Every structure is written in C-alpha cells, then in structure tokens.
Length: 158
Image 1: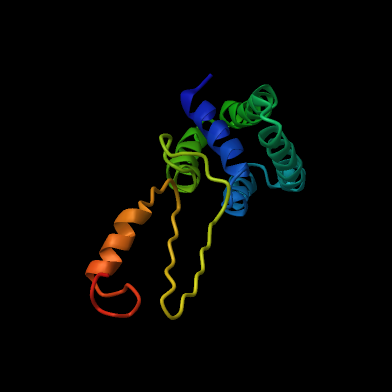
Image 2: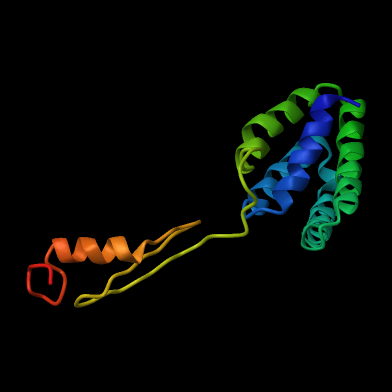
C-alpha cells in the first residue's frame, strides 16, 4: 500500500481524537467533494461514526479497534488513488498541509485537555501552582521570608 495512503489514514484517525477534529473532518470532506461529490453525505456520516468509535477505543485503550478503524480509511484512500492516480498529490497535500499540523509532535506526552489555573492571594498569603511535578522545601521558604522581612511583619528575623 502507498505510504502516503497509510500516513493520511493514520493522521486522520489520530486527529479524530483531538480538539482539531472539525478541521480534520472539513479537510477530508473537501477532498471527497473534489473527487466524488456524490459520496460526500456518506463520508460525512462515516467520519462522525468513526470518530465516536475512535473516542471509545481511546477511552478503553483498545489499540486493535483503532488500528481496524485506521485500516478502513486506508482502504478508502487507496480506492481514491486507484480510481484517480492524480489524487496521490492531493493526499500528500492533505497530509502535509491539513492533517499533520493538527497533531501533537510524536514525542509529546498524551494530552487530556486544556488546563486553566486561577489563584487569588491577599495579605500575606502565598500561591504556588504547577503544571507538573513540584517540590517545596518549607524550611527554605521560611528562612527566605525571615531574611526578606516577611516574618511576623517585623522586617527582621526572630
């Protein structure tokens, strides 16, 4: 099977599990609109159905199910190229310009969504927030506070 076909199908199925799903869907539908406009409604429905299945496969860690779904799209893209070899360039463009930029780099950790942290402090309160691991040495913090005049409001260590 053509390596571009394999890569496009893998990228599409991977994008289905991201926040960029709608953009990946639109790009894929646009390809079908140019190649086989009569198949667009069926492709739109299938994209939605397969996305639900991909999300379920990710939720349950079912790698085999996700591979089967990717295989289904590999066959669809392969048929497009078989019927019109000029579409191989379109698939390459879809991969490089539309789908690949939507995906996280291969070495990045899994992302489960956006994180928003909000904190308010007043008076002598302190706030510590971290997006990952953090180590706090309270003895060192207390020593710094004393040195900087934060201890009991006296401006000197006691």
